[in-house]
Length: 406
Image (cartoon, rainbow, N blue to C red; front, side, top):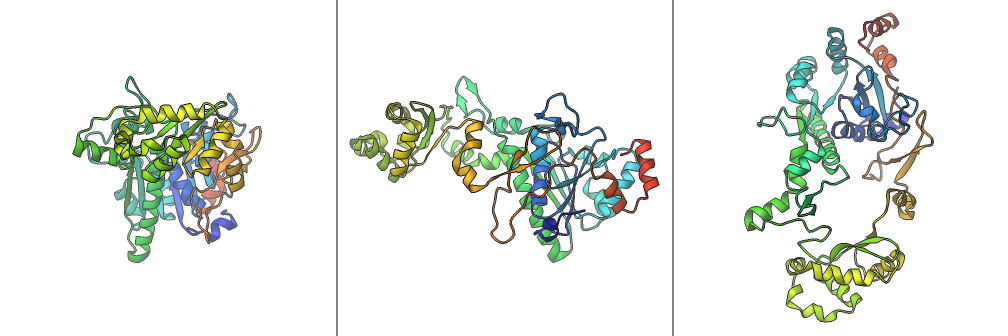
């Protein structure tokens, strides 16, 4: 049931049970699938809620385009099984699945894991060397452990939303960087656990948490706060640590310009015709430039306002100053460099008006790259085949369906 690419991938022969929802758990499992693991996505009989987030064809049903954009990305390269693991029969099927698997991925609170028989103690009773990869909002062991949470909650709790936007309105990032970061880190941890198991024969628990990821990605700001007590405030798109670093308007759009460090500031000052600023004490180092970033942003804005985006970027590139266009999502899709790099791969799915532009595995290996082989599964698409592989007969599978277990 696995593709030829999966049979020859880095993780060929590794089976992963994916009980994840939304992004952090499912994308972790997707990265493992990209590298050749046989990943079985397990969801509710009627389809889990994350299947329908941001539907491509609103009002359509499963397999008719009603699946959401997020689901299409998170569940490529997986096989789909519907199952109610809270029934007695469902638990027995889970046990048989676990016995044939290497990794269980679940982004669920500890109490839910235990109720479903997916806690580490229950899993190791079935398969002693199993690896349990858990993803929760706040981690296990603290006062918030049983709380639910999403990406934006973690962004808010660590100070990231507070320092994004403006003093009168904190802003969370539109891109769910905490979710994707947690997924990537737990995939990294799972790979490490598989390497350790190859040496010792023992499994372990890999624990990711949205809050811990957000703390890791925001840590150096917290270090500065703890040791310097700077109590920084949000200042829009400017940087408090260097300058100029801001989004400025051109004649026909917007660009982001970032000059960090003395060499870049020197090149920027010469491009702007402000060589005398190189000896101005207000701009003596990055922190000073950050403290006076309004002046630097104003000068950059004045310069950019007389140029088109293309003209401004060409001059900045010639001066070797990091800069880029502020693209709309459509402009990102049309970007010539993104196209030339071949990052987005068109993948068909039943009911869609066209192929979905699927981002490849975001790290490239020269000899054993991740691959996008199959689209996300239809609801329960591989249920019968997976259960047959486990040794269940056609009559037994029909009985499960009649009983409402699958």
